[in-house]
Amino acid sequence: MYDVENIRADFPVLKDNIYLDNAATTQTPVQAVRAMEEYFFKYAANHGRGAHHLARQTTDHFENARETIADLLNCPAENTIFTKNATEGLNLIARGIEWQDGDHIITTLIEHHSDLLPWMELRERGVELTIVEPDNEGHVSVEALEQHIRPSTRLVAVTHISNSFGSIQDANGICKLARDHGSLCLIDGSQSAGHMPVNLKQMDCDFFTTPGHKGLLGPQGTGVTYIKEPELIKPLIIGGGAVRSVTTTGYELEEAPARFEAGTPNIPGGIGLGRAVKYVQEIGVSDIEKHERRLAQNAAYRLAQIEGVEVYGPPDRGAVVPFNVLGLNPHDVAMILDETRQICLRSGYHCAMPGIDFMKIEGTVRASFALYNTEEEVDALVEAVEQITTLA
Ligand SMILES: Cc1ncc(COP(=O)(O)O)c(C=O)c1O
Image (cartoon, helix red, strand yellow):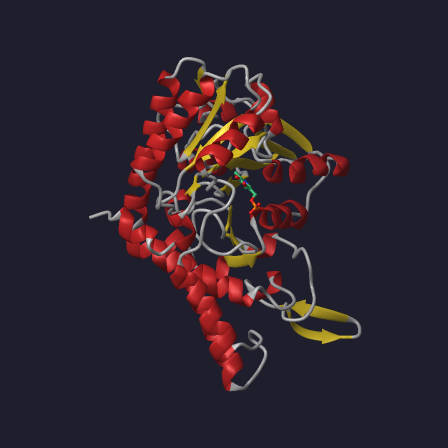
C-alpha cells in the first residue's frame, strides 16, 4: 500500500514546508544523501582510472548507479550517458549530429527553452526549423506533427510532459511517426522520468534526456541522456577518459558511454542519483504516477471551481498544475502563498516563453507534485488561493 507518511519521513525538509515546486527540482531522500556521504567518508577516489582498491570501489559504485538508471528506463547501460542536467544532454545531441545544409527539424511550441534554443541555434548552420503549435490544452498530436514532416526532416524533438501545461504527449506514437519517415526522434523526459513508467525499448526513440534532480530524486548537477546509436553523435567535450589511444597525430575515441564523459564526472552525484533511482523503484513508478496524478488532477479541479481562478492544461494531466488568480500577478500570488502558508511553488514563464505566450497570458503560478505530497497539502493550497482571490 502507498504509505505517503512513511515516504515523507525520508525527506526531512518536508517537516516544515509545503513543497510544490517539484517540476523545478525535487527533494532528495536520506538514503541517497547517505550514499553520497558514504562515498566521501569511506571510499572516495577517481572513476575508472586507478588500479587501487578505492578507485575500483568508486568505479563499481558509479557503474552500478548507471545500471540502476538504465534498468528504470529499460535501456542498455552503455547507451546511458551521465550529464550535468537535461540541458547539457539536449545540447550534446544538437551539437553532436553532423547536420547538412537544408536538414529539417520539427519541434513544438510547448518546449522548455532547453529543448528549443539548441534547435534554434542550428538555423545559423542552414538547418530549417518548424515549431508546431499545440491545441489549447497543450497537446501536440502525432497528426499535427505529421503534417509538417518532409523528406528532409532529420529530427523530431518533443517533450514528453510539458512543464508549462502539464499535458502528456504520445511519445510512442511520435517516435513511430519519426521512424516511419526515416527521421530521428528525441524525447525530452525531464517531467516524465520517475513520474511515470518510461520504457525506452518500447518507445524506440533515438535520444531521451532527463535531469537527475526532478522525478528521479537525485542531487542537482546530475542528468542522463540515452543515445541509441552513439556513433551518430560527436562528443560535446573531449579529453581524459574519453579516448582509447592518443598519439601526437591523432586519437581514437572510447566506446560509449566513456567517449561522452571526458574528465572527472560528478561521481558523488551519480552515486546519489543511482541510490535515489533505486528508491523510486522500491516505491514503484506506477504507484508514484497514480498518487501524483490524483493529487494534481484533484488540485486542478478544485482550483478551477474557485471564482476568479483560471487553470491551464488538460484535465488528464501529469503532476503539473499551472493557474492564475485573475487580476493578480503570478509572482505576487506565489509570494503570498510562501509568506502566509510556507507553500513553495513557482511563478512566471517557467523557461517556456513561447508556450505561455501562446496562452495569451503573462506567466502562471505553477503547483507541481511529487511522490511525497499529500491531500492535506492540496487542501492548504486550495484554501490559501481561495483567500487570495478576495484580494483581487
Ligand atoms: C521539460 C523540461 N525540459 C528541460 C528542462 C531543463 O532541465 P535542467 O535544468 O535539468 O537542464 C526542464 C527543467 O525544468 C524541463 O521542465
